[in-house]
Image (cartoon, rainbow, N blue to C red; front, top):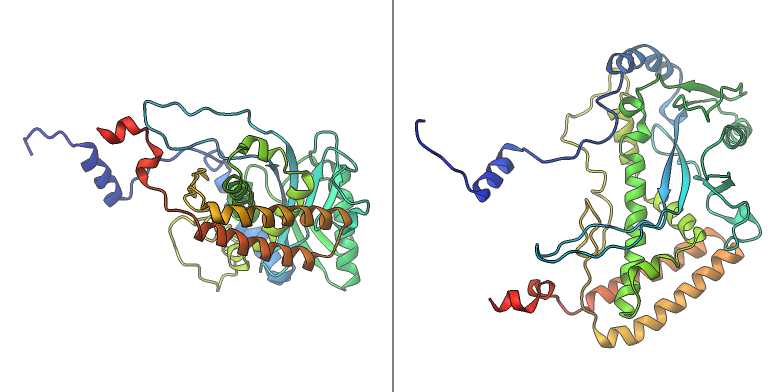
Length: 369
């Protein structure tokens, strides 16, 4: 317009918000994916599969790594203060998830660790809420996958069903002949586009897991000021992680799975899918108070001293009972009832807290100015 204009930071922020412009990190493999190959597979192979199999009989399986002791490593502070970090916990397991197109059947998770019989595990591994296997580096191997596939086929055969299972062309996924499972590979370099479990389902699963882990750690911090998050996270055992990830898988909704399958192109020609904005994988994940959905930022609040004295004892007692139930391999309803008690206690603790002021997070010399 022929006039000098120097926008302020506030003006620029509001303009970006009005225009829907966001600053985001590049992630994933979409840019390097084979777009044409994915579209060709959807139009030819997938259409043929959907014409033969009902949505309840079309399955997808995929594995992912999980740092089961991982805590948030970001937080808010004033510019003059540097946040002191701690050594990142890199205790890793592999989790294989499998579900059908309609979301009505979520197969028990397959968890792969390093130890054949972890000391924290019950003697009878069949009492675990997941299928547990081990490998040298806790990675998926062709032997583990083949055994899992044969067990799956045996169950499908006993029910008189025939299904189609879609997996990526990973070297740990060997091609084998099965009686009741049609085993199909997705085209190379297309999984980020057409693999349903890559379309937010696994991210939603991990979101629930992080939420539950952070809730437990934050509650412990609220009840005990003399211990750090780094010390608390070391008390999380592989058995704790197994139960948390199984509970998280139960929390993944059918609607989430259905949306992700449709987003990956798994829909009949007469099905219409509404064009929506980017699907929020953490929209239904209940996060602790003052925890960011993007970073799971840990924000501590003051505790009510009266609540601390009573709730601390109960919470610790529940922890002892939980470990006993896990060790002895009791039935799932026992853990569900125990978790319901823990949720009620966590809510009571949150409601009994003293409200923290914004100024409490800054040095006193700054607030005096």
